[in-house]
Image 1 (cartoon, each protein chain N blue to C red):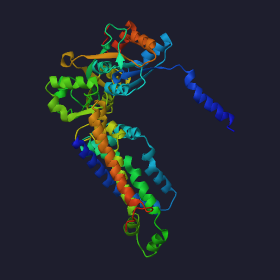
Image 2 (image 1 turned 90 degrees about the vertical axis):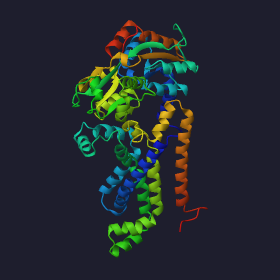
Image 3 (image 1 turned 60 degrees about the vertical axis):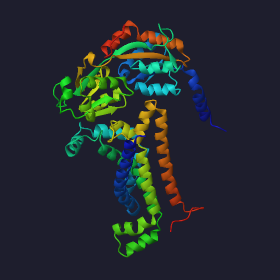
Image 4 (image 1 turned 135 degrees about the vertical axis):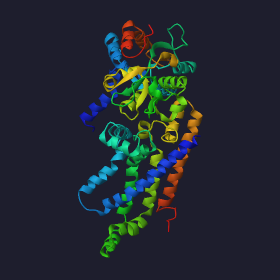
Length: 224
Length: 258
């Protein structure tokens, strides 16, 4: 088992999820609470990475943000290296790639909060920050958990973007899904089986966690 | 009652595969991507046989054939991967002198390539010792024969340990060329076939790695034993070894074997 790659995948998913929460909570609140036709465009844009082939993203990050464009040279000046072949590059790719998986559950959760509560809080003078932190997040905490777990898992499972952008560098860009690919290509089916089982187990465990928490009907207990 | 349009569409979808002749499916190493397409067009003109190629690293294609991919012939960038398929009973070289040895159809050449606007010192082996070289793209040495040759070269020059942190590994040799051409890597150890493509000839220049620095990249072909088109495969192999195609290989970056 390649524990270095396992640790790297976990680190990438954790960093990506943290950044995504900081972006997705305000974005989802804006989509739910805001008014105006342009919000439909915002929501569409936030959903785009879900339907976009990862190769499109990989191509944009590699070429349009590469050192041959002015923007790419800005990145090189800032980071000291191009986005490609670096952990930072994978974080940028993952944040874009997993954005819908953080925004969608939060939008659904925030939208299901009773509007009477939101209106009452507004009448009592609550600003948007207070509205989100004291009404929306506490009442939609299951959606928050879903957003965290889905973003995390989707990043762990990322493959196409990493293959195009990563350069397979141990400790920097060789994630667990790339290791699995390397093992299959190297005819090392036994090791590939172990890696695949680890990824499968991780996904089942995390999904079981959210569904046991978010089930509000049937035998599962409601959380108090 | 289905509409006539739907019925016609259904009939078309059901019968279309029968109407067209099954193409010859060629599994080709990624270094052949710039070379093979015009050769296959010429092959169809000469013989009427339509051939379609899939370009991947030699190891990827080997894995796919091991798992039942419907290829008829495999053009590897080395002899090891096709030999592996022969030993597994999945491929053969029937009709050639030794049916258990892949048929060598060309030899590959490794070059050091960089963009003309890369601000690197001039292209030579000394560039590999230059601190200005921050990222060097190579193909994955475990699955791409050109990647293996790149690592052998660096080891022979006793530069491998020093350069290892600066190596970026591409999935196949065509992607290694792409990493260097998009300037994400400063330079690349790539195939001469890539370096001679119109795009890379305009963007950059290359230095031929001396042949004594790496074992020869002997490119071998095998027939996938499950093929139903053995006669057509033999025609293609004969065509690849014909003087005209061997001459075309020479002008597109491969060394002829005949």
